[in-house]
Image (tube, rainbow, N blue to C red):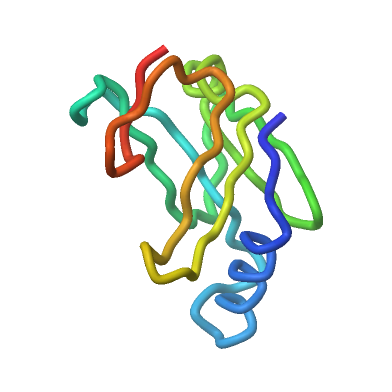
Length: 108
């Protein structure tokens, strides 16, 4: 399962409320090669299902990932920060053995 924090849920709900996203859009999370630690997260809004998608729902938010990415993302929490040190979505991944300083890449 991929989980959503309360703050991340609130941000997604705000994006939907301002008309930026339709109700048919969901979060697509994936892992791609790259970054200073070897693997990087990719987060986007999508409205098209793909074959072999893994589909989850937490706190009313639909989260979709491909099977290969799910192996790296199992039990990960999508968080949102609006603090002074950075604003945006980030991942709290218990599978990561190390992360880079910016938090956008990781290794297992």
